[in-house]
Image (cartoon, rainbow, N blue to C red; front, side, top):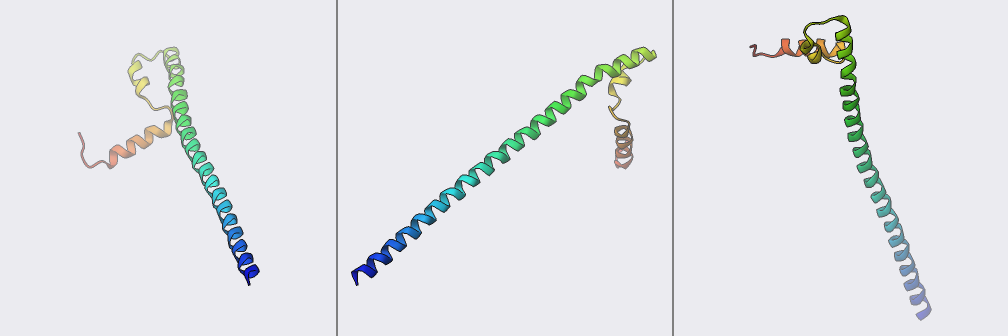
Length: 101
Protein backbone atom coordinates (compact mmCIF):
# COMPACT_ATOMS: atom_id res chain seq x y z
CA UNK A 1 0.00 0.00 0.00
CA UNK A 2 2.79 2.37 0.88
CA UNK A 3 4.67 1.41 -2.30
CA UNK A 4 1.70 2.43 -4.47
CA UNK A 5 1.43 5.75 -2.64
CA UNK A 6 5.19 6.29 -2.94
CA UNK A 7 5.11 5.37 -6.65
CA UNK A 8 2.21 7.78 -7.28
CA UNK A 9 3.99 10.54 -5.38
CA UNK A 10 7.21 10.01 -7.35
CA UNK A 11 5.21 10.07 -10.60
CA UNK A 12 3.53 13.36 -9.64
CA UNK A 13 6.91 14.88 -8.72
CA UNK A 14 8.47 13.76 -12.02
CA UNK A 15 5.57 15.18 -14.03
CA UNK A 16 5.86 18.46 -12.11
CA UNK A 17 9.62 18.63 -12.79
CA UNK A 18 9.02 17.97 -16.49
CA UNK A 19 6.39 20.75 -16.60
CA UNK A 20 8.77 23.18 -14.87
CA UNK A 21 11.55 22.32 -17.33
CA UNK A 22 9.21 22.78 -20.27
CA UNK A 23 7.95 26.12 -18.96
CA UNK A 24 11.53 27.38 -18.47
CA UNK A 25 12.31 26.47 -22.06
CA UNK A 26 9.18 28.26 -23.32
CA UNK A 27 10.14 31.38 -21.37
CA UNK A 28 13.68 31.37 -22.77
CA UNK A 29 12.32 31.05 -26.32
CA UNK A 30 9.91 33.94 -25.69
CA UNK A 31 12.81 36.01 -24.36
CA UNK A 32 14.82 35.31 -27.52
CA UNK A 33 11.87 36.20 -29.74
CA UNK A 34 11.36 39.46 -27.85
CA UNK A 35 15.05 40.30 -28.16
CA UNK A 36 15.04 39.53 -31.88
CA UNK A 37 11.92 41.67 -32.38
CA UNK A 38 13.65 44.55 -30.60
CA UNK A 39 16.78 44.06 -32.70
CA UNK A 40 14.68 44.01 -35.87
CA UNK A 41 13.01 47.29 -34.89
CA UNK A 42 16.41 48.85 -34.22
CA UNK A 43 17.76 47.61 -37.55
CA UNK A 44 14.74 48.97 -39.42
CA UNK A 45 15.22 52.35 -37.74
CA UNK A 46 18.93 52.36 -38.62
CA UNK A 47 18.05 51.40 -42.19
CA UNK A 48 15.67 54.35 -42.46
CA UNK A 49 18.32 56.70 -41.05
CA UNK A 50 20.97 55.38 -43.44
CA UNK A 51 18.60 55.63 -46.38
CA UNK A 52 17.80 59.25 -45.51
CA UNK A 53 21.49 59.99 -45.16
CA UNK A 54 22.20 58.40 -48.54
CA UNK A 55 19.52 60.60 -50.12
CA UNK A 56 20.95 63.68 -48.44
CA UNK A 57 24.45 62.80 -49.60
CA UNK A 58 23.06 62.40 -53.11
CA UNK A 59 21.86 66.02 -53.07
CA UNK A 60 25.30 67.50 -53.96
CA UNK A 61 25.23 65.45 -57.17
CA UNK A 62 22.01 67.21 -58.16
CA UNK A 63 23.64 70.56 -57.41
CA UNK A 64 26.63 69.76 -59.58
CA UNK A 65 24.31 68.73 -62.41
CA UNK A 66 22.39 71.99 -62.06
CA UNK A 67 25.59 74.04 -62.12
CA UNK A 68 26.83 72.16 -65.18
CA UNK A 69 23.51 72.80 -66.95
CA UNK A 70 23.85 76.47 -66.11
CA UNK A 71 20.67 76.81 -64.06
CA UNK A 72 20.44 80.28 -62.57
CA UNK A 73 18.02 79.46 -59.78
CA UNK A 74 19.65 76.79 -57.60
CA UNK A 75 17.07 77.14 -54.82
CA UNK A 76 14.49 75.52 -57.08
CA UNK A 77 16.89 72.63 -57.73
CA UNK A 78 17.34 72.14 -53.99
CA UNK A 79 13.59 72.01 -53.42
CA UNK A 80 12.89 69.63 -56.29
CA UNK A 81 12.15 66.04 -55.27
CA UNK A 82 14.74 63.31 -55.60
CA UNK A 83 12.46 61.23 -57.78
CA UNK A 84 10.07 62.48 -60.48
CA UNK A 85 7.21 60.44 -59.04
CA UNK A 86 7.40 62.54 -55.87
CA UNK A 87 6.61 65.68 -57.86
CA UNK A 88 3.45 64.20 -59.34
CA UNK A 89 2.43 62.88 -55.93
CA UNK A 90 2.91 66.31 -54.36
CA UNK A 91 0.82 67.91 -57.13
CA UNK A 92 -1.93 65.32 -56.65
CA UNK A 93 -2.01 65.96 -52.92
CA UNK A 94 -2.21 69.73 -53.45
CA UNK A 95 -5.07 69.32 -55.91
CA UNK A 96 -7.00 67.21 -53.39
CA UNK A 97 -6.65 69.67 -50.50
CA UNK A 98 -9.90 71.63 -49.88
CA UNK A 99 -8.16 74.83 -48.77
CA UNK A 100 -6.16 76.66 -51.42
CA UNK A 101 -3.86 79.54 -50.71
